[in-house]
Structures are given as C-alpha cells and as structure tokens.
Image (cartoon, rainbow over all chains, first blue to last red; front, top):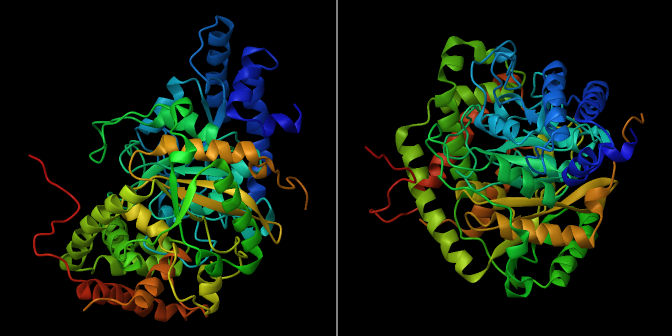
Length: 477
Length: 64
C-alpha cells in the first residue's frame, strides 16, 4: 500500500473498501504493521491488538462482500487511548501501578465503534492517569515521553499523547482521546491533527478511567473535521451506565449548518500578544480565513473567574478521591512523575469547603457562558500559545510569552481551555499553520451541544486550507 | 474582595500553559510536597476571596 492510504480520510478508506481496492484484512494488517514498527519511535503504542483485529477484519470483509454496509466507519482501523477498557486485555492507564491491569468490561465507546464495523488495532500511550492533578515532565508515563512526529526532540502533548502522534504520523486513521482540561486540544495542537472535545455528557464515560467525574470527556482525534463528525456520530449517545450522560444523540449534519454569515465569532486581539511571536503570522492568517468563510468576528472577553484555581481544585479533589486506594496503599510512589505523586497525595487533604466553593463558582461559570453565547455563536482562540516544548524541559517552560515573564495587560482567551472544560463546552482544534517547523492550531469553542456548528466551521476552514493534510517526516531520523 | 484582572489572568495562564504552573527552575524533589501544598493553598485562598450569592448551589445534583 502506498503512503497515501496511511494518510487517507475515513471516507476515502471506506470507499476504497467498497470498491475492493483492498480488503479490510489488508488494511488492518498494513496499519497494524505500521503502528507496531513506527509507534515505538514516538512512544505512541501501549498495546497492539493485531490478532483480535484481523479476526474482526475477516468478519467485516464478509459483510462488505455480502453488501451489508454499516456506514462510513466500516472497515476503518483506529486506535484508542489506553484509559479505555477492552475486556480481557491490559488497560494500563499509562501508569506503572496498573501496568498489568486487566479489566472485565469494554468501554461503551469501543462497543459502539465495533458495531459500526470499525476495527480497533491497538491501545495508544498516554500520560499516567491522564495527567492527574498535575505533572511536570513529558516523561510522566509508563511508556516514556510522547514524541512529536514533526520533531522527535519535542513533546507530542498530553495526556492523549499516543493518540496525537499516531494520527499525525499516519499510524491510525483516527483515534479516541480524552480531555479533562486540555488533553485532546493540546496533543491535537502540538501534533497538527484535528481534535474534538465534545460537550460534557454527550459521549459515555463508561469503561474509561475517571480522572475527574465532572470534567472528563472522550472525543475523536482525526485527520479532518469531517472525520471527527463521523466518529462523534458513532460514539455519542445516552448511556445509563454513565451517571453524567446527557442522554442525547448526535447526528453529523453539515448540510443543515447555519449560514456562516449569520454566525458571530468572539475573539480577543490581545491573544496574538500572548502567543509566541513565531506563531503570530499563522494565527493571523487563520483569523483571515475565519472571516473569509463569512463569520463576523467581534472582540469579546471571557467572563472573569479564577479558572486556574477552579480547575486545579476540582481536578485535584476528584482525582485524589478516585485514586485514594492507590495513594493510601503507597503504590502512588511508583508513578513516573514526582510532582504527580505529591499532587495526588496533597489532593486528599483538600477540605470539602474548598471543593464545594469551587463547584458553586462553577455554577456561575456555566451561567455566564450561557450569557456570553447569547451575544456570540462561537469563540475562536489559539489552540496553544506556544509550539510543542522540548521533551527535556519542564512543561511549565512552555506556552508562550507568559511563561517567559512578559505578560500583556489583558488575559485574552488564555484561560479558555480550563474555562471551557469547567463549563462542559465543546471545542474543535484545527491545524492552521506552522512555526519553527511545528504545528500551530486554532480552537473553536461553542455552547453546549453545538458540535455541528463547530464541525461545519472546521470543514469549511479545511476546504480553504491544507494544513490538516500536511505529513510529518515519518521514518526519517 | 474582587480579584483584579491581572490576578485572574495570572492564575488562569498558570494552568493553561502547563499542568503545574510553577517556575521554570525545577524545585528539588523534597520540596515538591511543599510546592503542591502551597499551590493548593493559593487556589483555596483565591476561591475564598471570590464572592458568590448565598443562594448559589454546587454544579452537581443529587436525584433520588
């Protein structure tokens, strides 16, 4: 198979299967071999599932032969972040204490994808415990630091590190990641892939490791907004096994998207001052494309809340409660990142009054964003304010001018990632250029359940640009 | 006491740009416990200063 297959869209792969250009078994073998061979270059592969995948692929081929078509994901291989359980297989959560953990259930999202005929070929590496309350170094993982396919001396981003690098390098056509506060958007931005963080509750969390019950979301990381829409349609939906489920389905309907000229995109000009200088041309050009699509751009400000303190308190308190047995047993000391270890221990000491105060303020955050979205339809901001950092550097050295001590007067949208996650809002990360040879991304955030609007904007953005089609130098030194 | 926009921006950027939000110089391992406790305390102090209406309920609900 040519390289073009490895970088093809979901729809193109499905069309190729229906036209018998290749079989599902051939496709699964090719991607599995590529994932096994190249995955370790990026520390992206947690667990190959080749044998199971080939057995499944044979069944899919039989269905396609009998013209029993299931939809656009049928026969398409994919990878899943290793916090999603597969019954009878190791699910490590990226962490040494769970390196041999075998669970007896399969995550709802994987069961749903299986029903579409999509084939899981491997579990993908992640930051240990999805990042926990905090981690300092890129090597905070059982699998080592996630390496960026664009420059292996740089981080892939996390905590969905393997998902980001595997999609970017064409090792899987799409992957599932998760986000509590940044873990889909960050690797998507750093690796130059299209990632979608759905509205909280739209996608079932059943069978996924929990980090923060009230903030975790599972979402697709793909080569295009179109692919994200197709995957989200498959994995979304109510689930009685997930107490946080919104009980809503999602149907990807770009044909019914609102006219772009009717949409207002809130942005802040000061965001360009927060971004690293080398990124500004790409971000500026991306905003011109957004305007060119027809969206009216209006200067906006985020509601003023202490988002960092809120997200820190909620994630720390919930995460430490979830992992209380790990902490009290002492096995927490087996984790790779020293700050992660101390953060989990300290999280158990957060008083209830602090957590409750954070959750009360969070009600106001939701209310104020509801008000904001009465004036604008989406928010547009840089996905990250710096390019992917070097893996040898502490992660608090990354992220733009703020980390270098130069702070613009106004905050802009710099807190949009924690803010959006606290409010349960959906977000789409779109590759929009390069700086110093590394991907740059835009994020588009909308009100709850506005995924079709975000995806329509993303699809049109990608009709007018080709950043999402760029390929890293895979296989080179 | 209302937080200034600079204080809000500083607190938000610390989470956005990095999970830890600490200075660039890595602290010695034995100080990390103090670093995280201090971070949690700063978060608590920030939230304590944030005034909210007495009627505000937490963003979760129990249903029988």
